[in-house]
Image 1 (cartoon, one colour):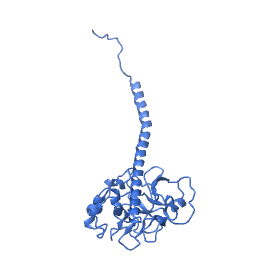
Image 2 (spheres, one colour; image 1 turned 135 degrees about the vertical axis):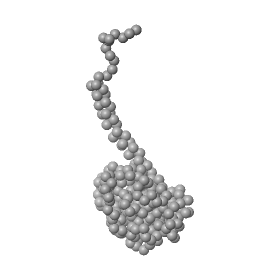
Image 3 (cartoon, one colour; image 1 turned 90 degrees about the vertical axis):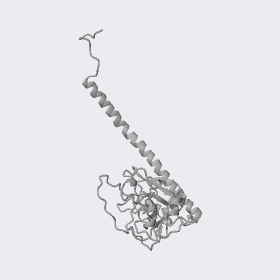
Image 4 (cartoon, one colour; image 1 turned 60 degrees about the vertical axis):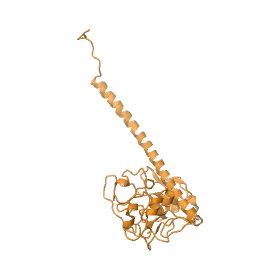
Length: 286
């Protein structure tokens, strides 16, 4: 049976096709933000789990050794953030409590963080030490022979060099017990997120690579790849994260909390001091 030449043809007109494409574009535009929010929620949950594990490791160290690990040992203060000296950091000491006993056994503490004998340990990339929201993924940038950490212990409440007289929990030759945290463990910050500087020395180093103060929450680095200035060696730096709206922290009581970027500087300072003797400042953004 032949088709009549006068019979109407079936198909879409150009206008109908453009309308369909426009509708699909609108739907995709509405869906993408929701997908991004869901992904960030999952990354934030994973980050909170990392901080919880670090907090538990520090607590287990305190229970077994009757003190939190020192933030850094092996050198006289103040600590300079350069690859000179021993600079054995607190993360090295909690490796057995992070199910990393093999790394702990292979690390030669007497040789120091930058010794050639410790290079195989120093280059190890430990998943629990990296926030999944880091868009640049420290695993894929900087020196490939150095494993990095986006989490740092709180050494002080103000911008000051890392030394033996800091008022935080993890600092030079520190041996802080729960009884020394006179402000209360629920009001004292233990570990938090931070941004890496271009000269980061890795997770084994007890410098600003794994120790920070609570003087401020830093702005998110520019994504255009602009060259970052390297601070002078005695500068330590504050906290920071790629999570929208704030940072995640682990408190000395084991709780993991989200701290808003709008938190008052006074509240942030008090979180970093273990025994300032002041009443907790009120801030609805905490």
